[in-house]
Length: 149
Image: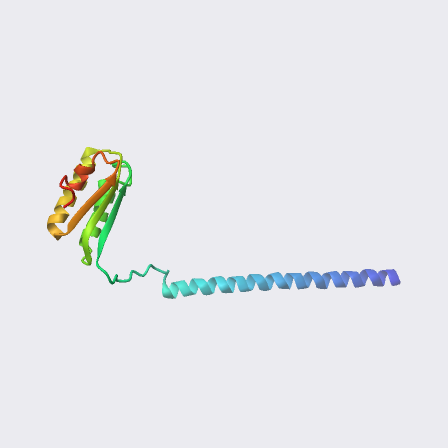
């Protein structure tokens, strides 16, 4: 009788231990989902955090960095550079535009398109433009050939 009593006592103890462990993990999953849906609900109401661009107190110039080989397939293509130039020139608060070019050369057609857009934007917005660069075989072509001024 004593042996069966010990076996049933151990069985009951193990059963209670398993129930406690199951309840613990069930509670953990419940609170995880509550936290997940709370965060998701917060972002639905308030939107994703965005960068706040504070208005600078001092005058500034817009900066456009152009890196790499000039070609239609690269990040330094007319298709990708022209919107950057347009944004820099159309910034009403910017006193001028600085174009930093780091290119070993590339497509003369792409450089010509970029150069024509720079000249057009200089005339349209009447902003001072300064260009500088390293290793630029087509630096003068892209910058407009007048030192950027």
